[in-house]
Amino acid sequence: MGNWSIEKMTGHCGARLRGVSLQNASQSDLIQLREALFSHGVVVLPEQHLSPEAHIAVAEFFGDIDVNRFFTPVPDYPMIAEVRTSPSQKAVIGGTWHTDHSYDPAPAMCSILSARQLPPYGGDTHFASMAAACRALSPGLRQMLMGLRAWHSDSSFADSKVGLDAKTEAFRDPVLHPAIIRHPEAGEPCVYVNGDFTTHFEGWSREESAPLLTYLYAFVTQPIFTARVVWEPGMVAIWDNRLVQHYATGDYSGHARLMHRITVKGCPLEGVTTTG
Picture 1 (cartoon, rainbow, N blue to C red):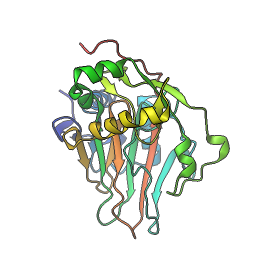
Picture 2 (cartoon, helix red, strand yellow; picture 1 turned 90 degrees about the horizontal axis):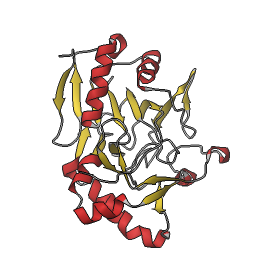
Picture 3 (cartoon, helix red, strand yellow; picture 1 turned 90 degrees about the vertical axis):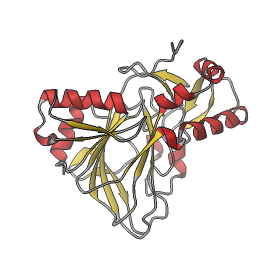
Picture 4 (tube, rainbow, N blue to C red; picture 1 turned 180 degrees about the vertical axis):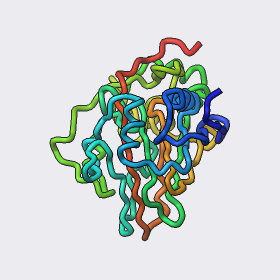
């Protein structure tokens, strides 16, 4: 038994962990944390109040830090990205279902978000289990998707209206990933297409891809697959970008919100030949 107290949030996604301060976590505490992440897709840790140094140290336990090329860094801490909403903004960063960094050849392993300034209400983050969604697909559709790859692109940042200053040199060529991946550590088959960054299937036109992608985006984010994180001061959430998608609720217009995010590098993703 470890030092963490682990409480499931929903049937398919999320766990709330208490009992350990990340700033003083032992190696065994962090190993148990990682195991919980792979089991639940997202883990929520209340009352952590991470310093930037501790935030970086926790991220480095999971792997090398992947500095996001589109976000403003925290002053003096270039490895930490600011996820900032000003009171005048009408839309928010991450306000659609998506997977962080799916536009990279080796997509992000996990993201670690620390609450710094919260609005008086709203700003919750929703998570959806791509493993549960994959299990719920009909056998025929799952079999077809196992034979497909899809293109992912960072081009949506060019049209951003959420305060990102996307410089031309930040953009990269589109990349291909399997439509269903096998999670590198957990071994779970997971749906791996998302509305922000997936453009079309390999060998299909965008018009041909759109009906199936639209269906999948709606299917994988059904409420039964999801968990909702209600942020509290000092809370930290860690999610595995291969296991879940997430969605930031922009329902606090007129109020500021500031989160610090670190993304951890992942590995190239492999497809699935059988789900048995």
